[in-house]
Amino acid sequence: MTKILIPSGALGLGYDAEALARGVALKPDLIAIDGGSTDSGPSYLGRGVSKYARESTKSEWAGMMRAAHEAGCPLVIGTAGTCGTDSMVDWLLDITREVLAEDNRTAKIATLKSSQDPAVIAQTPITPLSGAPSVSAETIKSCENIVALAGAEQIMAALNTGADIVIAGRTTDTAIIAALPLQNGDHTGGAWHGAKIGECGALCATNPQSGVITIDFDADGFTVTPLADGAFATPHTVSAHMLYENSDPFILYEPGGHLDVTAATYTALDDRSVRVTGSVWHPSDTYTVKLEGARIAGFQTISIVTIRDAHYVRNVQAWCDDILAKHAAKVRDRAADIAFTCELRIIGQDSTLGPLETRQSTLTEVGVMAIITADSQKDANTIAKLLNPYLLHHPLTKGEEQPTFAFPFSPAEIDRGAAYAFTLHHTMTLSDPMQAFRLEVHT
Amino acid sequence: MSTVADIVVKVRSKNAGPFWLTVDIFCGTAEAFQQVTQSLSTDRVAAAFQADVATIKRFDIDMLNVVKFSLPRPVIQGDIADRDMHGAGWAPLIAELSLN
Image (cartoon, rainbow over all chains, first blue to last red; front, side, top):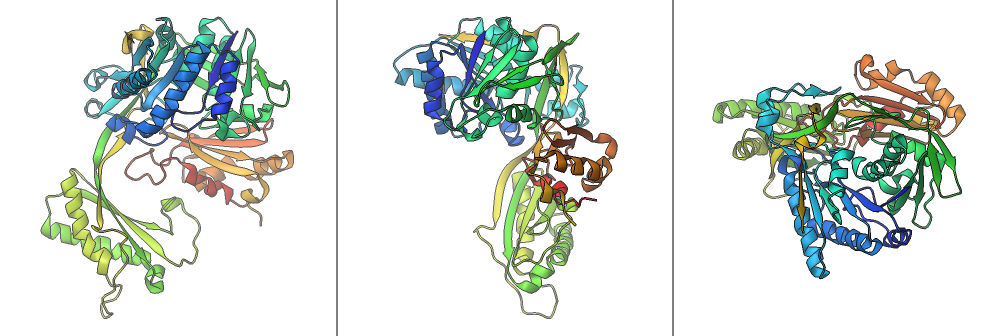
């Protein structure tokens, strides 16, 4: 029997403090929180930084550290600092020490690091997953950061150091929850399935913003219970969570095997808790971990102009096409050595769906967002400056008085810095689960 | 003519990692589920995304009255040409399809 308390879907999203206190009173064996996701894009991994403010992270992490201290159980975070690079493990370790100092206490901390050397990965046999881009060794080498996703085995190793707090770099979302029940000998399929249901906190229940849930793992399955007022789990909310951000709602691949929930049954214990049994874990012959990498795809400058003149709103596509042609000619004439791409994205027409858009409607106004990508920030800015006179004054017809359009900012050009691209959707095989990861204990 | 959105509770699209997109149609009732599964062929979904039908995974889940489609993301998340980092903006493509 293992009781895991999950404060929310991710550190930084907020949680219900009263519900967390209720969870602490239930004497959990472990508090687990996810620290990251790829869902906000490649920039965080590319730069090795957190999406959330240090202030939010510290405030919420301190609350969880105090909850774990009070409960007398370990606290584990996976994918620290959004992307789980080594830099983010060190960042959270620093925050942890700051909180401990403020609380005038000490704790044993284990860190698990997941970053990989791009030059080494470029020479390592890796296997593309479905939908992976094709990558050359050169592309892999050019990654700013590569991380491997640790599984339950590495989290178990970290817990077995006797640490009060485990700060892990990139892990699978489920590993931090599944590790302890697996180690305690609870049902294997139940451990992974419960971890998947719990990884987003109360998203598997009603009142999903409340965050806090407990999962009780046992010899046959698991029971999920949300702890906030007005939060209820039903067989429907729990089973429907397998759909969430999952390409296959029945099969989940993890390091060392896969989970199959096709035969799982979901039973309401009361109006709040749901019990799940019948999930099956299939171990694999080899131990593989997934890799994520991000590289710089270019540097961008953007510019935004809005158009309210009804004639120009109606003819905005022709206006943009004309500007792109004239701008390209001007760059050829004045800055031919700069390689660039320029897109004029029409906000109000098809800026979300692009060529897949099927609807058209009459608009009051439109926005045009120019997106310029080049090999350096200086080049991108130069190309944007060459575009500006057109965005400001380009007339649809020759004879008319010079028009002027609306710019919300001065300067009109906004340097965005590097644009990053996800480059890896691959796995690599390990002879030992710890092979690609580094465990350290700090006292 | 009614659309998918007219008879279901919700259509949701989300990233399933940076390389896949998943669309969940929460039909709400067995009747709506029946209508959606009969009317919404995988071919029509592929056409809406201008995708190869062979790349689309389809799950008709009667227990939940949910129809789910997963496909390689039309553009890899975060690429220069990507317009929607979280992938939620693709749902209307399916929600606005007419029911045959």
